[in-house]
Length: 101
Image (cartoon, rainbow, N blue to C red):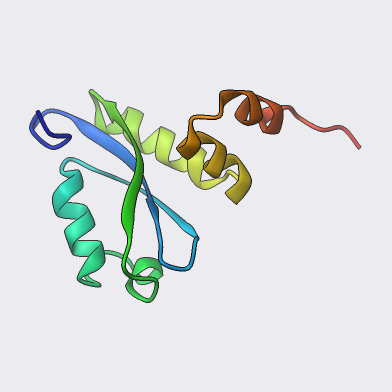
């Protein structure tokens, strides 16, 4: 079953852009959304950084959960997003620790 096979599912995704940057979004159909990004019809950020490819995704049962997670990840640094994409939980946890200056 593909990531978009369930109509009642919502996905948070991370795209890797041609320039190495990441784009975070949410959708109900990942394949269609990536296609739109690669056609330059989904977001200004990705339109000038094509081609893009899916680097990571998470499935949620509600749009509210997906939107909350999307906003959380969007606030992360590139380094933290990279750790998530790579599945490097040790680095991700290390980067998640609050630093007191």
